[in-house]
Image (cartoon, rainbow, N blue to C red):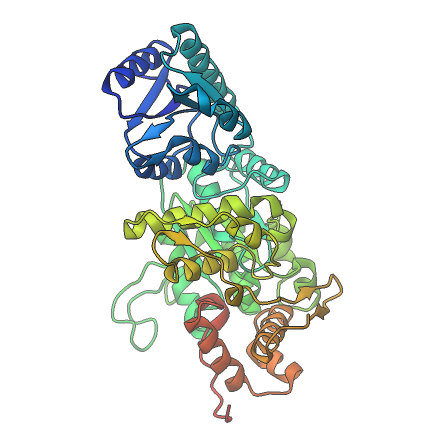
Length: 458
């Protein structure tokens, strides 16, 4: 049978073949697709990979109590949950679990009503303009607004400027814009802070053979590689100001000239730029040309930090754990209080920091239960809107040093030498600390950047 895109999805957890067959026929007649499993372990795996509009769970399963599994389910992530049993004695417990309670044999009209409700939920979900985009997780109001902005701008041929703190997922948003744009070309991401300045012109615009020493053959730059697609400039304020003039010309004329070349090459590329600092401050400080800024900011999108989408923390944590389970073929789950402990924390590193925390606790898990260990969640500083940081009693000196260095780097637009002068240390010391933080998962390659060419001691 072929189901429409708005078919209701049903997860049946039952080891009775006859009952599974009957529910399957009812689902098919009600424009619903059904996945049937016969154990709690298989049900956990299925529920972690898909969102279901209806879950029918047998109260007695080979590997445990179906009601216990029903209590684990995130009711916000799925639709209606119903426990099916032949033992009326569990009715009170089932009602306490905030799920429906059905006694076998289940009347056909009751099943039909459940299937109708599942199909109706699927219709509402598929027509929801604020539903999550591919690769992005969130149900909070700020994320719903973000999804709506992405959907509206994606099909249009305008530049998009993304502004958000480090770790908020700017590249994910850029990829979502590309995926919904209908463009057939590639998505090419360029980290402007990770390319040597003397090579950036060649990397962006390409070069002809013999253009400079070592140019043994012609090379197509990022613009040509993204032909018909999207070119994403991450940390645009790290691009040398002199090169920004040539970028502006390409955006205005939709053509480029390779280094060492003389012919104009037409390009059809959608440009998305991003930075983690206030773009107007970058213009005022001279890191970003005003004319380029106003060309790029045809449609600005602000990406909310995790502190402004606090309700998404449990959803994100489950998402990261699900990805780890899928990658390593495990079935680990959070302990009962894990999500509350994660929600109680401050996350100055945003979604990236949360992802690293879940990964650490996954690695340290005993058996299939992931525990959020107290030593893995030390007190964290809170950043003020005026640039100050409030440290709390209980933080280690390492924590204080790390947060002060990373915050200072962010305020200096990741300029290692400037941050070193502010902190009264050498750029080499800054880099050595960042290498250590990267090895521990506290900083990524975008922050570490290139080795400074100074030989001062650390």
